[in-house]
Amino acid sequence: MKLIDILKGVKCEIKGDPNIDISGVCYDSRKAKKKYLFIAIKGFKTDGIFYVEEAIKNGAVAVVADREIKEYPGITTVLVEDARATMAKIASNFYNNPTSKLTLIGVTGTNGKTSVTYMLKAILERQNNKVGLVGTIQNMIGDEVIPSVHTTPESLDLQELFSIMVNKGVKYVVMEVSSHSLALNRVDECEFDIAIFTNLSQDHLDFHQNMEEYAKTKSKLFKMAKRASVINIDDKYSSMMIESSKAKVLTYGIEDFAYVMAKDIRNSLDGVKFKVQIEDKKEEMSLKIPGLFNVYNALAAITVADFLGISLRSVREALSQVTVKGRFEPVETGKDFYVFIDYAHTPDGIQNIMEALKEYKTGRKILLFGAGGDRDKTKRPLMGEVAGKYADFCILTSDNPRSEDPREIISQIEEGIKKTNCPYVVIENRKEAIRYALTNAQKDDVIILAGKGHETYQIIGNKVIPFDEREIVKEILSEGGNK
Image (tube, rainbow, N blue to C red; front, side, top):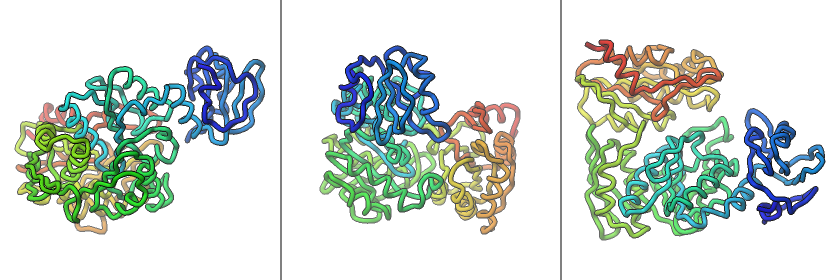
């Protein structure tokens, strides 16, 4: 493809030959090859501007930058206002605007994004559609699994993924859309047909200045949706999403009146049942995964399905089989107590899962959790306070401490839990914390291992260490833990 065609619609200043042939585009200098275009974007840890020469040595013939760079013989330079934002446009042009050939459904919110995408994938596949998924746990093309690095990939990687999906016959794509991706232009040039808002609670305030800024960033998705905006009317930030919408608004909820509503909700540790009502249509729904929050997730998926003309009966059959890794995921122990793994890593996430347990007749509700390092510190005492309010016993431990001292992270969580009367212990080593929980479990206790969810690793310092809680539970029990 000619460079000038890749730059279609891009406001820029070109120094050199605009008609050179480009065989590939990259923002990582190590991936540059012969006849590549290198885009020098600024990251959190480094700056692409420092790697221009390396990219050229590896074969790049053109460079996009948002600052003046040294001129290199035979190299075309393209000066733009914002390299990261420009990358989205370049990516869409290079891959021939793939989202225009897909029905793209974006899901945003603090909690529930992953569950909603998996529910929608199951519903759409039941209609014999080939479905793509982009998300936290993994990316998928039908049944093919592609590992996921970010909740939402960089714009160049994302457009390439969409292009592959188009070539493989995908019709629908369900996609988690993080606030980072909206703020960092990763989803610019994506033609969203439907946008979904799940909820908003405190998270990522290390990145966003405050909750209003966080909400405002999320609302960008609803300005992008062309056909429908599906909104949780029970969330206090729903009005901001509705006001931002340029498409038809469809609401769902339990407490306030909505277009799609859930009634007669019956929860158990084996799942949840409820009646869904859409105007004069009613249907009984059953989920394998328990919790009121999963009723909300199902309502979001049901609303989209109804908009797409899919029958409630077909939706019911699809939802009855859905499970999501690391979301209220039961671990088989062969013992007389329960163990669940959940991704809950925010005050609201912890509250949701603990509230889901409130109505069950069980033994003690034991919550094991920590907080991620190099992330929003203000939520840590809030997590401790919420945990202490709902749990019968807490085990404070490490999560992904990254560059922080895990003991300092735990001490910040303690500030909150000390405001409650909840008994707790501190065991920094997460494996030993799990061993303690299992060894001391009593009949009918429910142990929640919170924070890791689908993750099969721990990030300690700059090392990624294998850490799959499912395997760790089995290993401890096989060694005689809780004989």
